[in-house]
Structures are given as C-alpha cells and as structure tokens.
Image 1 (cartoon, rainbow, N blue to C red):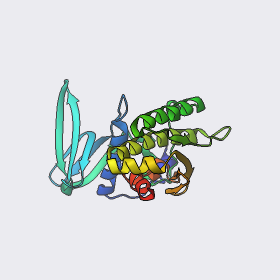
Image 2: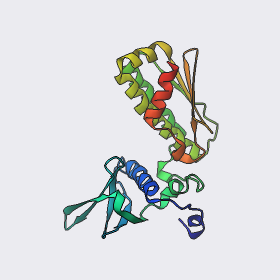
Image 3: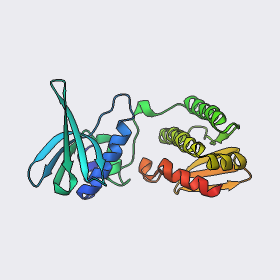
Length: 229
C-alpha cells in the first residue's frame, strides 16, 4: 500500500477496526500458510502486541497470540478498555479498511484459469449429486476473455455455493424442498445480492461493487435461497 492509497482511508472507531481484523483473520486462517495481522493494542492501563487471532463481540474480548523461543503466548484483552489499535501485515486488505474505495486486487497465484474454474464447477456438481441424490447443474456464462478479477470472484462464489448448499442439505425439510424445486443453479456477478426461482432454475446475483466485502455470508445466502423454496 503506497502513501497515496493510504490517503483514501476513512476514520474508523476501534470496534469497526476489530470487526475488520476479524474478517482478515478469518480469511487468513483458511490458508495453508496464514499471515495473521500484527497488532499493538493500547488500553487505559497498559497494552499488548501480537498476532490478532479472534474477537468476540459478545464477550468483548480480543485474543492475541505470539511465539517466543518456541513457546506460545496468549493475551486476552477486554475491548471496553481499548484506547487505540496499531496494525501491520495487512497491506492487501486495504479494500476492507476503505469500505471498497480502494479496489481489491488478488495475488497472481490466486487467479484461476478458465480450465480450473470449469473443473471447480464440475467438482461441485459431483458433490451436490451425492448430497441431494439428484443432478444439480451449476451455470455461469463465461466471457471469452474474462478479467482476472472476475475469475477470482467466480472461484470464490463456487466456494460460497459449496458451503451454503451443504448447509441447506443438513436440514431435512430444506433439503427436500431444494430437491423438489431446483435442478439448475445459475450465478452472475452484479451490483446487488438477489435470488429468484423460475422453472427449477435458481438464479443468484452477487454484489461485487465493494469486492469481497460485498459478498453475503453463507448464512445470509442460505436464508435468501430458502425463501425461494
């Protein structure tokens, strides 16, 4: 992140910063080699530094971890006593801190090829057939030469669909309704989150105006889909 980019960042209160740090931590912890945010948190009576691991808004507690001489160190801080938060190791997450004003740019090794995308969709169809005991076709109309960012989003949508539809299948009533009503799931990128069901085709539009920050959670997408059943 360069200096000009930093000038686009808005002022955030500490609760907003903690929620964003949690988003970053949730993304990183799924990776093979996670790079968790490094933070220094000042409180009214002192402070602490370490890798941000978790934030519980109900308990009002933040968990920081670190390793010294191969020994793990854990620090639990009450958020009500926080006066300031300093962060580093989050350069690629400027889009979260800026509420979408700074464009999201995936790493080169995170961008799949068209062949990889087709394989991912095919694997998802195989898994759904096993889960729902029915062939469910996944449709996305690829442009001849889609932008790298679009290819990245499509890959993330496939992951989101896998998680969401698996949760629907865990509920017997929802699973039965889905099986009876849907044979095709069609998704597109757009400027809003929207679902419609017509002639056994579930159409899903996902908002990308603020990058991944605009994506719904699997719970929210699940609720939208189940309302169509």
